[in-house]
Length: 367
Ligand code: UDP
Image 1 (cartoon, rainbow, N blue to C red):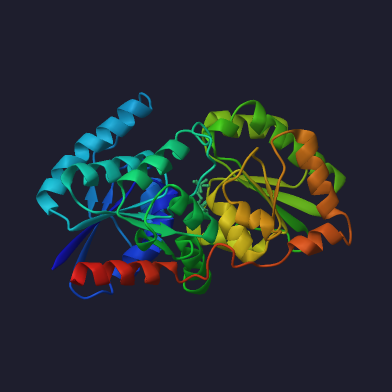
Image 2 (cartoon, helix red, strand yellow):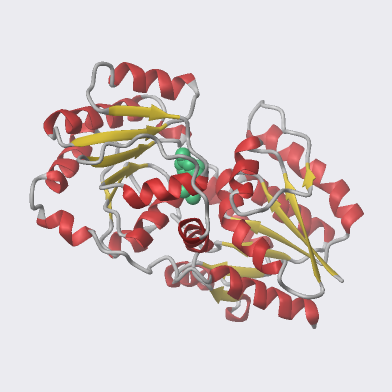
């Protein structure tokens, strides 16, 4: 039996690794252990549960106190499970502190590292922070690089990774989305008006909190006031910095529902019903592109440029005016700009990335 250790710490890692775990568990001769670093705690468990997965191992929840402390604690705590489980391979996804610490622990132990969603780059080492640094270092540490798109593959080759170590697989986010929409069981959806257009608004990035968030909320308010046939659904983090700002800036504003972030199956169904998405999330950009739901990306830069080229995403920055004028153009009756954006695109994959990854790794483990 070959042993694979899948390391995850946050909600998006659980969502994007769940399809890989499901596929690996179909492989003969492979025993897959899922380890949660507890970086996101229950949020990760809820996301994994939507795909029928429960972590087998948990690290103690990292205490607060800054990135160095969190990353250091996760790294130190990984020593014991690596020792006890003696994996033949470890898998990390993306660019979080957990992925970074997981790849480094694998490297220190001489355990080959597979990196899912490899090759994303902004080439600004401090933006997104600290994720861009994590990605670049994980690329240096990993042995298997699974690129979600051709652009990501090019970035890896440009970084000097030999072509035989890079596979273009598509993004497993699209596998997860397909699973949710076909097999997932959404919890009861919030009561949604039937005869109005849904604006789905999310802002979860820490760098958005503060002035940028206030600008985004002000733009949402202007949009709702201008278009009486729209309503906004805002799944927002209960953190007072976010909720407080939303309650203040949307006070008295008609047709707004602020809700707790729903679990991923429900959220995927909401995305598919949205008329327009306003978000700062990375994963939602991929999902929106696959669904063809026009999306305003409230950031200054995105590494998901494929969605922009596909025409489904539009980068609008974080100023109220910029966000509002883009929303206005798309919401005007008969908007041609809107119609041009409303096209599903396979730019991020065809929903079979996890099978490709599991076959490549299964073949290598069998050798
Ligand atoms: N998501 C969710 N519930 C929400 C908002 C997002 O399940 O209320 C999912 C979403 O579908 C996507 C992932 O979480 O798959 C994105 O995670 P997040 O925005 O936290 O991180 P990022 O992708 O920006 O790293």
